[in-house]
Amino acid sequence: MVLTPQSMGGEDFAWFLAELPGAMMRLGTKTPGGEEYDLHRGDYIVDERALGLGIRVLTAAALRTIRDL
Image 1 (cartoon, rainbow, N blue to C red):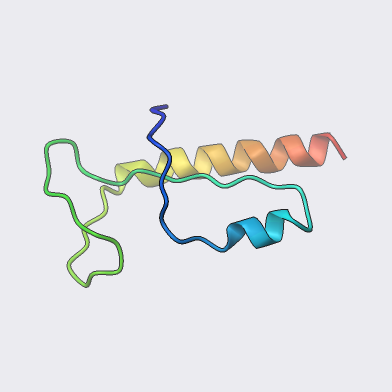
Image 2 (tube, helix red, strand yellow):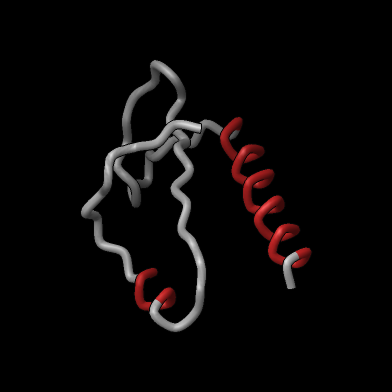
């Protein structure tokens, strides 16, 4: 895991957190050494190897939440 600097990007997720407990995760999908792309572009390229990590993190969070109910 690599921590990144705080982003001031627009995000409405805080409104959900005002009502319910939760957390937000950002998943880096840039190919190491590859070109950088802004989000929401038609030519955005995802390093699909990152998807498995995202699935594992979200699955672990879901299982922990179920366990703690």
